[in-house]
Length: 80
Image (tube, rainbow, N blue to C red):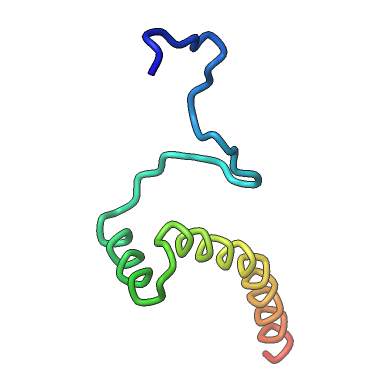
């Protein structure tokens, strides 16, 4: 090994940058994280991947739920 290294051009962080991902810090309840970790252990996937998938499903269904509620309200209003 060298006695001195030139780190003037060095950068902190991962060597290979993740594309399409953003590192964040988030506070979640312990029971929620424990549940995702338990599911991850059963499925063999990471718990962070499971949380990401749950958030994606929620976002995908959010518009669907609003549309469904509107249609049901309209149908009920017309039926009365």
